[in-house]
Length: 335
Ligand code: BMA
Image (cartoon, rainbow, N blue to C red; front, top):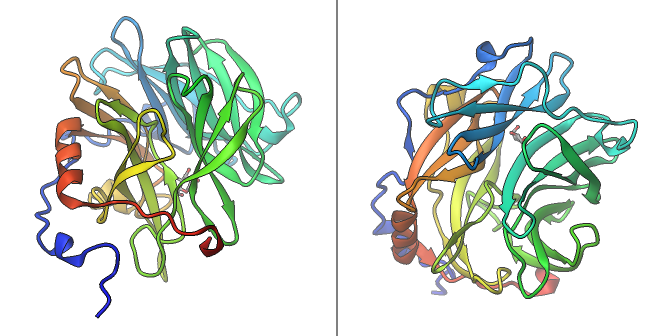
């Protein structure tokens, strides 16, 4: 009998210790917390400011159905949020027509070389979702670079440093043949090329078949870039968004070293299972505690609220060692 490449015995021996622990105060932000009328708040980018404040750049859906971004700041990253009294970054379709139906799902990368935060986000237009980029020093004023990856493309984040002299962007172009994660390189953040397939959606019955996308920006560890990604399972009663993990080579991030076979986090709590879109956990950001190991992962729950789960980099890496198969690239004609 031919064994599938991913060894089922690995799965049978897996003990499902939770790797991401939900915060007891979840959900930590909902529309009720907002200082102006909105429909929902979810999918937030996250970063630590220089003074230790946690900043979330939240996707806020207004009561027309269009999204903008709004900043919320907290001293402990859990409660006491100071939310901007008005939208922080609004779509600007006059100058950026690709934003006509809103801007969504920001990911934040602090780039030491630029001493700025680079925000990549989905700009939604008649052509579909595309990837846009903006720079900021303070999350009050932004320099927009406009659309950097045309539709249909989303789920992007910049790596915080150059790789072999080039900026590297992970993103998720979609075609009717599937939606996989790609990486592209640029000398100046404006012109992108050397596109490479980074991680493929699996096929058939897998939890991450057909459609995957990066979730928060990659986490740099001594063993490689740790990447949390979402897999979308289409079921007769809707989509199921779950989270998996993979590890990529530090100086060659298109090379996958390890990929977990099973998902590590999925919708279970009531606020994840029921909302505007049921059964969705969708992290777009994380911060790291001073111990250098504890991750605070901020995720959208059922497209209605923001929740927090904690994880340990060390545990994620040991779990991958025990539960991952080495990623095998399929031949180009299989795509
Ligand atoms: C994805 C994105 C996310 C959203 C999710 C579930 O395609 O649009 O913003 O949270 O669907 O609706």
